[in-house]
Image 1 (spheres, rainbow, N blue to C red):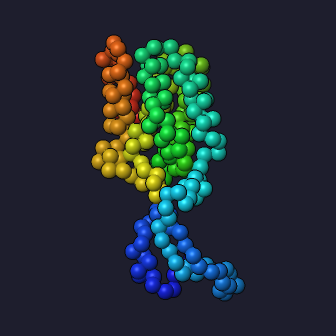
Image 2: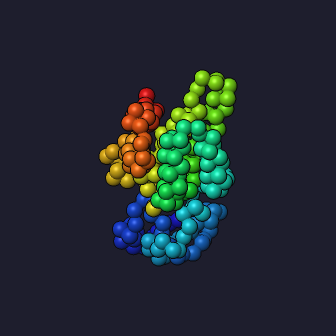
Image 3: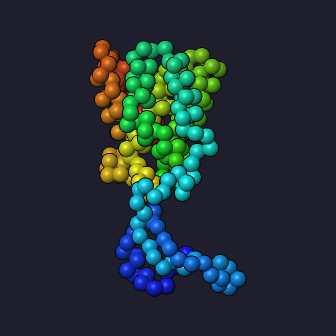
Length: 207
């Protein structure tokens, strides 16, 4: 689209990543269609659905959630199962998880990308645990879910995919460890050693 009049003034109305409401006309220029903007303003939240403007996961997030919970149900350690279940059933976590991406650009950088990533990793590790019986299924599934769960607060999807203040200054790894602390402390008798082991899984996943 092109702005020929009042371009400098209109450029002050929005930033990169904002959704805007525009009016204009289409004309032919060098045998191609060109959209000429006459009016432009930031769009209100109720005027658009971001999922229609950016790429989304191929399957619905609710399908991925059901698949994830089925794998969580197979966890045998009661403390780990309760921790993971409580986090996934938390209202704020679930609302974010059903729509957040796994990254800004590297992988699964689209709506619903994070839960798709979690399910993909969980399925891979479940398969490996069936072949290599010495592997701990409970730790594997926990790691698949929690290694990137801090992305729910590291990223923002208000106007495209951007980093939050917490994401820039703290990062998803530390946020994930804080989540373990917060929810494990609510479980009576949760072992300190297990808490450290679970946090180690998150802390070590980038090497």
